[in-house]
Image: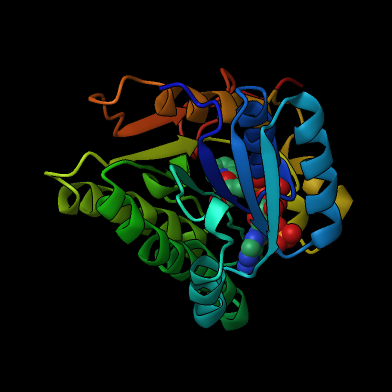
Length: 256
Ligand code: NAP
């Protein structure tokens, strides 16, 4: 697929994997529709994307958890940005690392609202247009955590298991249309993910990566780009990728 001037919509584009994905598509000459809550960070990504060759950038300040705002944002896109070719459902987070039976219900709500319901709202708003236009590709950010739960992470892992099955269900529902559906499932990636999980506790976040060479956000962006660049008749269903220091969501090799 030639991505020049194609419209690529990336949620959670202000940081981490979403920002790296924006830059990877920028280098292909795509037009980028970027969404997140932090407008300042989004503006930094937008200006870097233009330097790298994006054919245009349109940023929207959006919380994917707000169903009405999601629908309004998509409905009110300027005409020249409305025909989305690629949707990367990336916005997501983890909150806390607690035993399920003592966990914080507010943390659960935020993870499920963002990782599951937010992804559904965006998908519901964008995919009908893809079906009508007879072209499109939806890329969902799952995780190795969606395959195998780890202790104290049941709700985050459950949210990513939901993404995996929503991804499979959507692919079945789109059968007979040319719209493609891909789940990208990374292991540990060094981003702000742990900082967000531990609500800004940088020392605790750094320990997550101690002794491990994790994936970089760019590695995941390259996998997304690869799946999208396949010929139109090829649908990459799932990509599972980890660093060589990780076998699955439970098993790591850590250098002393
Ligand atoms: P990150 O650096 O913290 O970035 C998360 C992005 O999601 C930010 O741009 C954030 O933007 C956005 N976001 C969060 N809540 C949002 C909301 N309600 N509305 C709109 N945007 C929202 O984390 P990351 O590692 O890049 O994570 C990206 C995705 O990869 C997530 O789905 C995550 O579950 C998945 N993943 C991460 C890892 C990992 O180890 N890092 C592994 C597997 C999968 P704002 O705060 O500006 O809104």
